[in-house]
Length: 272
Image 1 (tube, rainbow, N blue to C red):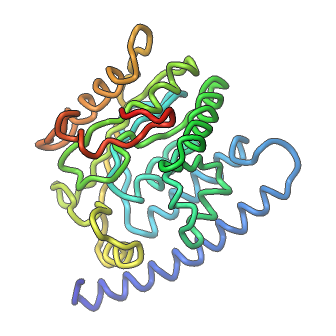
Image 2 (image 1 turned 45 degrees about the vertical axis):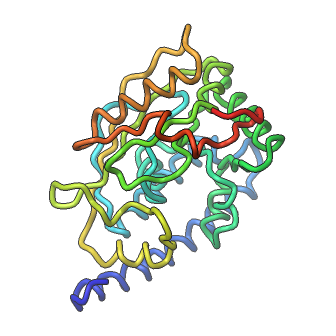
């Protein structure tokens, strides 16, 4: 924790602004839900609202955005470093996320995620996980963009963990394109070791450390789409993992053989 009084004051000021901003987000979510018509997060006004809200949240926290490439409609697969990933990507082009079910229980943020159309994946329930996969496939088939974190957990940003293939099958079945997206947090032209949300980190202390520092830069690279035709989900997962890893500074790639012991059960009750 910093002992610089200026940075401590900056952190408190940012927390107050963020609290008010989150309250405004809750108000907007319930306002949109009260309006008739299609689901608000799929509407043009809803997407613009999510994008502006996320961008302002990023600025309050002290996140500077740097992007390359152009997003396309389809399945977006992203390396996962922090809860900030969601805010950063939504600031550029909002889409619906697939998140672990535990996020739904987070105070306030869980409500925002649920009301914004997030798909919650219950890994310990094959039936619920299969339903989640079917819902994602349906949305992809309709031409909508869905964001997944195929690693299934966060890393410190120095490596790309093994990509699990479950949701790549949704792109195959939904006849959707796949776009790898590389995320990297930087501070003073070096990898930022403060931004990753890993190990035994808890949300409030992690947030306070972030807001008590001047800024962090997140580089978001939208890569060229991966051809789905004539490929299975495991080969697609491997290709995307390699492409994202190639953009990181001094990357360390964790292969399937190194991740075998931690492989989750996919919605079909099989190991990926």
